[in-house]
Length: 190
Image (tube, rainbow, N blue to C red):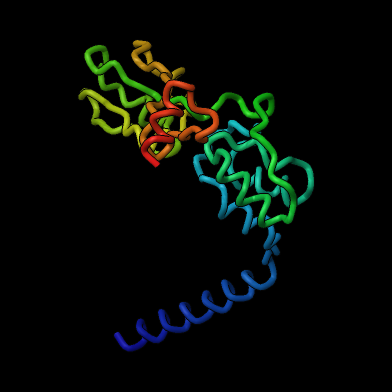
């Protein structure tokens, strides 16, 4: 019994040394700028930017091969964060480079859903909930509008619709752009 313990201890030590040597020998240096850029991206892995995921897009930005305005799920806030990190001017979202605008969300017609789970598997951000052979639904606040769930649906029960604006997203007009009928009421209130 003592011999078996000693053999396993020696074997574990030898394998540990081999793994330690291999990690040093085959270590790959990654670009720290690409890692910083990747941390700012939304990690939806949707491919709307034309790359297979957020990491390849980040590497392309770091290498100067892609522009900062291709990520539709990241939107304007993501573009501003990337511009600040890279010390460049923010640009508007590139509608041609991005596959579509991010102001859409998926909606599942629940009465038509057969619970096949194909949309669950396709969703890169887990915004769809449901179980096999049960109705599925979309968590609107998590949906990035990437449309990856639409094509795999065998019963075509998923539509892309405009997001509903909330009070937080509403852009209130400046006083001088208000209609004349409202300007007088505002001046009297002040």
